[in-house]
Image (cartoon, rainbow, N blue to C red; front, side, top):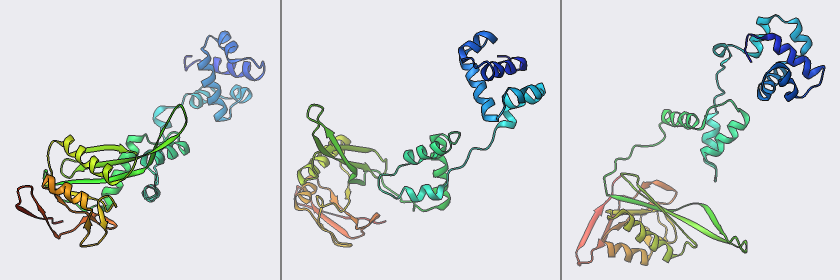
Length: 273
């Protein structure tokens, strides 16, 4: 429909309200598509305009409501509440995607996901809550069991088997590795490390695990006791194990770790923040 043809707009309203005709029938009468009729009726209903009101309005007034000026009609999109988002992200199982979905449900005309994430990054950047850590290439490999338990479902029986996700990341490049296991036993933990090292095709100087029972048998703030099998794996590869301090995953010990290499020599390494 041509926007200048306000006669058709009034006729569409008349046929819809007074004659109670279907959109298809109205379209045939005025020469418009079904979607055009539907869109126009939705706009007029939203603006509270019926046939009687449209008949009393001037052409310019009617066009201004049905086809508003894009420049004047553009309203600022509602900004997400970053304080609320930051607080909710601390809860288990909450992600930016989930919070964005809730935001879009409340504000359909709101920001798209990319803009939503950019707003949050800007918010975090202004707060400066993360300390910059200088990392050296090939120095550290960070490992942990990540996220909630997932489940594998047998399509035939419906039986579910738990799946635990092992993740690792090189400290400097951030290169990730992930593998799922049906248990978090010691064998799975060691296998995950071996497969990760094969994937990277290189050995780090230090492996930094979280204080999981598969890695640490005695949790200590300054002198953790490494699981014997895990220690032997480190001895085999000639790498150091330096667990993160309990409840402080971003803070690492400065104590000295000595790992014997396979050739009988000792390798002394000291980590600094």
